[in-house]
Image 1 (cartoon, rainbow, N blue to C red):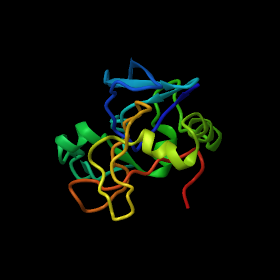
Image 2 (image 1 turned 30 degrees about the horizontal axis):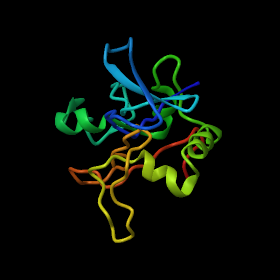
Image 3 (image 1 turned 120 degrees about the vertical axis):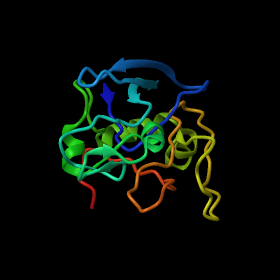
Image 4 (image 1 turned 90 degrees about the vertical axis):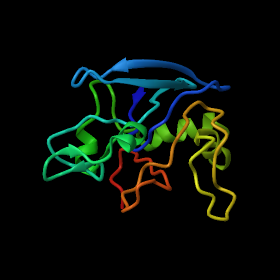
Length: 165
């Protein structure tokens, strides 16, 4: 089952669990990396498809031009909740809580899955020892999933197919 992660940009690396591949988004011709972890296939970089509305931070909504293509290339686009449910490429969707649970379980449980999914660079350790990860899964999650008036994201938020509170 294919699953879309909308607030993650990652680059594949050699790893212990994953098999990597690519697919082409027929809407704009962009090539995306994917990673198979266990029996699940995940997008391995953030979606960067530009819809008619529902995008912020990297897009100037007045002119609908990219504000910073460096961050766009690295982190993709950030969508509001309604747009995120509709913007996935054909055959892809936001992951359900069950899909997240299967991934977490396959990676050894919630205590260690995050470390195995996080990139080996880019994360800020806020004093709790929770900075960079090992990326043993090949997921290579970067901290690019929260809108804030910063040029460099410091955290990552992954949305399941359940509306966030």
